[in-house]
Length: 242
Length: 98
Image (cartoon, rainbow over all chains, first blue to last red; front, side, top):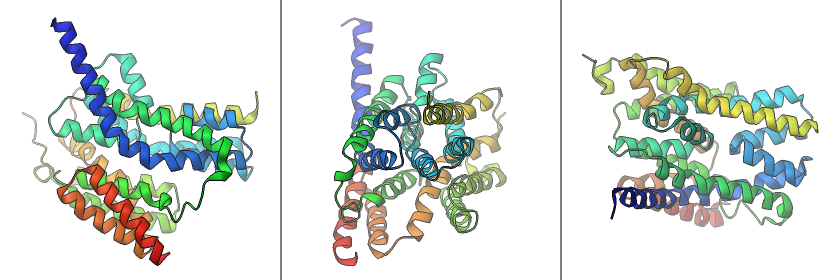
């Protein structure tokens, strides 16, 4: 085999490794995509608009908030600002992921950031931590199925929205927290993991009860990150540079 | 073009800015300070926790059981097995606890 053929077959197997890891995310997000489509149409969106929103924004929580505000006839600029606020955590992900994909061509980086979601970032970060390279083919395998299913299922939800059976009995509303807990647990070997988790849990819960959603996400996240910044570097496992 | 369409476009632009923004700011610095690096390393646990903690606190026994079992499974197994175990416990517990 020529060197080119070898690297191509590596890229293929990397892609399918990513696809395999994407499956829990596809399963966990499916009900939300369907639900989003159904709610969107219920709040006055057309099927095409629901489809467009999923295809262009691709951020479940922010889409739900946007749709909810739209249904309440809130001013358009406030809807956009709320979408921005819910997605603001991506700024932190972006800074972290940028370190892992700096070796990609710029166009690939631009696309990579477009499909970056919570699990996409977390699974990539876990791979980088285990010493493996975050390659474009692998990253695309991880992200593309989630994107494609999300967009298709949103449109399906918009068309067939009223047909979803009892979502509570199926546990659908609580699948994502379980999945996110799994991601949190996956980082437990990191220095400062427990203090960071405790700080974020306490701060986000207090913020949730006082300031309200969606700000509890940013406030809780900043609390955990600040703790890691403030504690002396020898605790955080990051050596002082020579 | 309808207002709805423009809301979607503006929301998409705002969202993409959050997705590239952090990288564009950080990549301007040649050397990342150790404290900044420590902060970045804390990002996944910090953000993901905020997506779990308030939801867990506002939930009931069925959800708590699911989270506890899922967390226990995650100590030994992978993400998929912990997820399936948690989902199974959740569905089962809700049949009884509502």
